[in-house]
Amino acid sequence: MPGPRRVRPAVLLLLGALLVADLYFHLWPRARRELGKVSPGCPCPAPPAPLPRAPRAAPALRRLFAHPLYRAAPPGPAEPLLGAREALRYYRRKAARWNRRHRLYREELNLTSPAAPLPLRPEAGWLQFHLGISRDGLYPRSSPAVSRLLRDMQQFPTIGADYSQDEKALLGACDCSQIVKPSGVHLKLVLRFQDFGKAMFKPMRQRREEETPEDFFYFVDFQRHNAEIAAFHLDRILDFRRVPPTVGRLINVTKEILEVTKNEVLQSVFFVSPASNVCFFAKCPYMCKTEYAVCGNPHLLEGSLSAFLPSLNLAPRLSIPNPWIRSYSFDGKEEWEVNPLYCNTVREIYPYSNSNRLLNIVDMAIFDFLIGNMDRHHYEMFTKFGDDGFLLHLDNARGIKRTTLLRLRLLAEPEYRLSDVMRESLLQDPLAPVLTEPHLLALDRRLQLILDAVGKCIDTFGEATVVANDTAQPQSAAAHRAKLDT
Image (cartoon, rainbow, N blue to C red; front, side, top):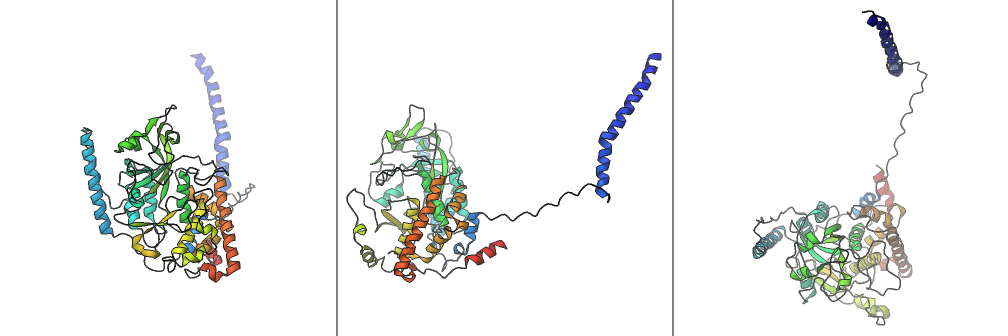
């Protein structure tokens, strides 16, 4: 067949051209690259050597906690608040009682689906937190139990919602139908989780960017849920460790409060708004009407969760009036506001006369000034630790401890600026950013006001009179920086 024979040379020429093109455009450049790696005469410039990576500065929070001021050992062995065996026995009884009541509640409602009893786990984060409370503070400086507790409060499902029995016992007789404590204006509930841990839930009532108007009278402003979270982080940064672990969380108010509560009063304050959002309010003396209700979107509502302290039956606490309570009227003033000798009078009264109580109150006053708390009418203490125990910073003369002053000065330095370490610490919370920049910068301004006031006192009365030497002088900051660099 002559036709195909005439085509055959053209096909061969085409195949040859394709082969040459493949060699020229693909195989030859690859071969040149391979030969260039070993050829000493290659005119191509060698690639520049990578520049040495500059050492990254340690995060401000890690630098702060590595400072000698935060690593000094306590003067003696930490005396625990609870005995482990007694606490486990007590909490096992409470867990068994809850399971029994829950079973009876389901039987009354004719719920036939089986509900297995929930076990009490000794390794639960909240229980380890309770066992870690000591004379030195609510938790050690490095506490894996606190980290686990924060994570559990943020993730665990709720199995109960109610008002607080501990709050009622602490504050004396009150109307048991109330959901908030009688003296408060903040709607708050007690949530119980699947591991039997309990937390105080305070819902969002003001947005982060809202600032209190300057013309507002004291205590008219709503308390802020994000302030509870920030107070825990600030307390840890100041190394007081007197605020219970607190974390932010988005709560489904229908599934995690309404559907798990057995309290009919609490059930009765839920309603659906005209915007189809699920809302609830409180039964209490103040701000407890439908116009003060909090609402989900339509079910989700953010708020703060503060871990409960041990039961009052297990670890009794005293509620003591603050000697420097603020006046609650327009024209009235407290004695400390008009009597220049008031501090001297307080110092002569037991237990302020012969214990660290007065110095602890100064710590509390500094903390309250930084967070803007003007309503510290009482403070609480564990009775076990006696007059020298630490003050609990809950619901968030005067000399100053040397360690407190040194930490405040450290947090005023650019390397450890308070606003920077707070910003970094709060990024760990699920609701971050917890504070806006104006609120963070306000911390720096208030800190400087404190240092200026202490400085004036030292200039007037002398350091020996104003500063209480509660510990030996720590290592110098220069030596600390050298240790961090190595």
